[in-house]
Length: 248
Image (cartoon, rainbow, N blue to C red; front, side, top):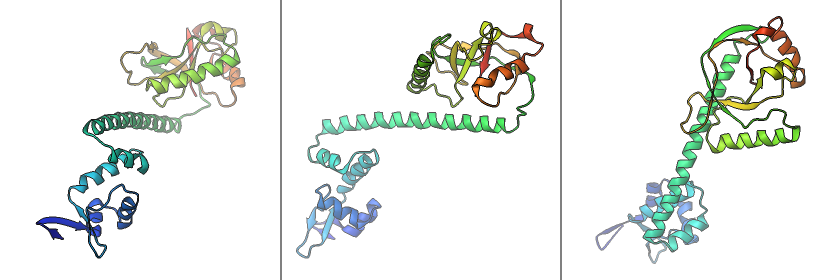
């Protein structure tokens, strides 16, 4: 429709441009969020091309989690300054969500890699394997810690990994020192750790030693892990390293 050489869109035409159904536009009009610029005597509704931008802003804010009520309040009282502030806020939220998605993608990739590797392992075998130097992010020292404090430390470590975006998808492991192993205190860990294949700058890390390591797998409850350690180090007491690395 044209009026004074200005082109207007019917509800159906405008809905097609916005890629929504007409009922959505009827509802937006009903709640005062987006109303047609013209309504003729026959009840026909007409929209202007200038309203496309308003619809796109509404659609964007809705996708970003704002309620229609919040969007309505904003659109009715907006100013250039408020719009700019809102866009900066939404940009920051999108950036954070993007970082979380990227981190989750890396975690999934690590889980897939670990599962594929595990499918080819013989869990009954003790092997001597070469490992290059690797980077670990450690918790605070937890040697001789009480059971109650251990729960607190694990919780804090998980939070720390999340907030610092250091959760790489690898399982949380434990480092046990040689003296604890010799005493039979196999789960008296000195530190918790998580592997960091691509270490972020600005964090303190622990670098493992490259070389040949005895590898064994424990199947069962943690309280029976002594059997696996004894099988691992049978006849090799002199070769027990400075520390042992446990990983689920």
